[in-house]
Amino acid sequence: MIDVRNVSKSYGGQAVLDDVSCVIPRGGITSIIGPNGAGKSTLLSLISRLQPLESGAVTVAGLDIAATPSRDLARTMAILRQENHLTMRLTVRDLVAFGRFPHSGGRPTVEDLAVVEEAIRQLDLTAMADKFVDELSGGQRQRAYIAMVLAQDTEYLLLDEPLNNLDMKHSVEMMRLLRRLADELGKTIVLVVHDINFASCYSDTILAMKNGRLIHQGSPAQIMQAAMLHDVYDIDIRIEEIDGNRIGVYFA
Amino acid sequence: MTATAVRTAAPVSRSRSRDYVGLVAAAAVVLGLAIASMFVGVSDVSLPALLGGDPAAVEIFWVSRVPRTLAVVLAGMAVAVAGLIMQLMARNRFVEPSTVGTVESATLGILVVTVAVPTAPILLRMGVASVFAVLGTALFLAVLRRLPTRNTLLIPLVGIMLGGVIGAITTFFAYRYDLLQTLSNWMIGDFSGVLRGRYELLWIVAALMLVGLLAADRFTVAGMGEDFTTNLGLNYNATMRLGLIIVSLISAVVVTTVGAVPFLGLVVPNIVSLLFGDNLRRAVPWTALFGTGFVLVCDIIGRTIRYPYEVPVGMVMAVVGAILFLILILRKRNA
Image (cartoon, rainbow over all chains, first blue to last red; front, side):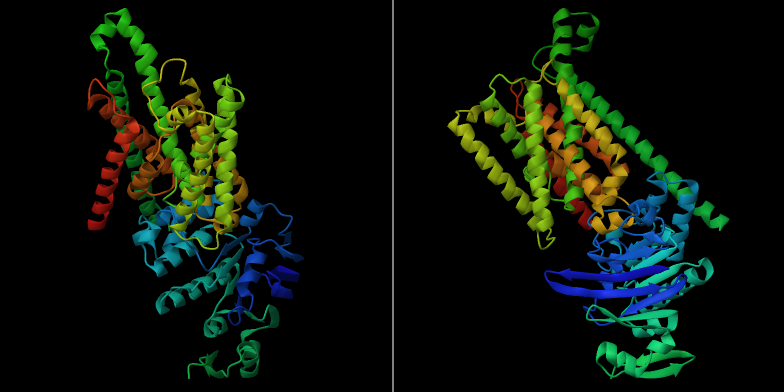
């Protein structure tokens, strides 16, 4: 369980997060949706201690993130941000292997290497494992980063727009993989997604944010309502039910 | 699962052992160069004379040739490795200690101590130079953190400007105190004055490099950026401080003992990066070997090209380094 209590954050006097409180249940997939500038990424980076808390408190699996040693947190929760700019030349395998750093401290065991190979395989990177990350396409690079946080093998996985740069095939594969990780390994996955339909089809819980506030929280069936989404995005979105999934139509 | 594990484990170990074979071969070449370097010079020091116990030859060998070669080896390794760590810390390939103000600050430190305590022992000079180098580098890194953009060209430009300002202050005071001549001795690295008793402090850099190698994984992680570092549970600021101290001390020790060795910290890490990537665990040994080999070759060329006169090693390094670098970039583009 992730417990967020009265968290606020401002940049230069401008409030980006305004007294947000929520409980993200243990297990399953929680998607955070909302328009640009709603504070989704800020919330994720505060939960994952990438940015210091200004006010309020966050606990992840009972660990107070402000008081727990960073390395212990790194074995409980992994975070991948939206913008990842690697200026150094690392091979895919080396990059993914660094996901084991919190566990092995740079001395990978045979088990660590097996976890690394498994993460590489799951993200369909085996053929390019020895290539340098800077020689890959945007989508391949995104998958390499995800493989790295996957190799970190944490109970909690926080992903800021993991579908960034991915084509349709790899987007669907990514969401299926996350679903499998949640269902089979009991991981708790929190992601920021822009495509409400991916959120609808693959999440257990949806958090809707707007102007630095959490305005709705519920199951996809509860959130995927025309009135709710109008509230969040200020546009009319028609909801169709296709094969038991609620799909928002907003292209025309 | 077992099948895939076995299949994928094989390439890892193969590439590891290939790595070691390559490193051992490169180390053998560098050792050969070091031995050759001991037998180059104006005085006649040959192997038969040494073995025959010719006292003049033995004397020159131990007083001049061995110290000079050791100084080249140590300084070459250390300056190249310091450049590599600096590049990871700044997350930019176009910086090195002599282009971000580290070397200039160390020089200013030596100047200050020379003016204040003219009879200062070398250890005191080195200490003051180290403190100045740490402060100058910290200033550069602090400016870097406040830059609004991470523009690839802006970072080296900021470093060059900062180094220019510190260098100008140094030159001004050297001029006022009539120390310009001495200043140029520190600014231009030169191994011709290395004798027994004047280089031994360079062994400090060997210890610093060992620390760098032990912390290689940390520096690689820090090179991925602050968010990656925090996610992996490592203290970013502590890692940066460790790097800052290693780079600054290496620069200060080298400047006080043999003078500034420019260009090396820029060229060698870039060549190694193109060939082997930036995982420091692999890159540090290669950078050390390349750095040593490179300075050894340039020093031998400098001593033989206008025999019996010497061309400063820095000049040879600039020419050879530029050619090497061009070849690599052009070959990479064709490949």
